[in-house]
Image 1 (tube, one colour):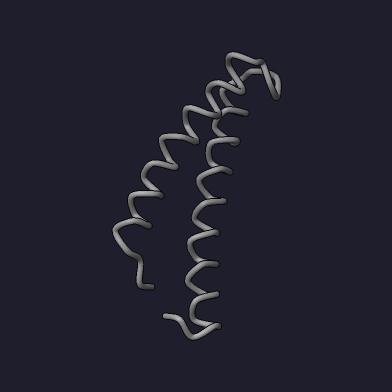
Image 2: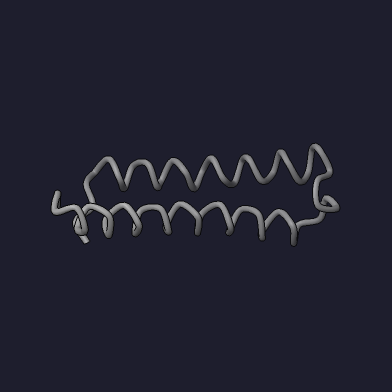
Length: 67
């Protein structure tokens, strides 16, 4: 896979954003019961969702011949 520095930077920032977002949603707004297990699940889901996007982006670029 041919990722650029922008892809790695975006992913690194997304990890920080997802941790902060899950903390705010779960701890402050008491979403999903407000426990640490829900916060970990939400944070992991957000990070994995971004990883899937990066893989999809690369597959799509291969399919259209732009890579």
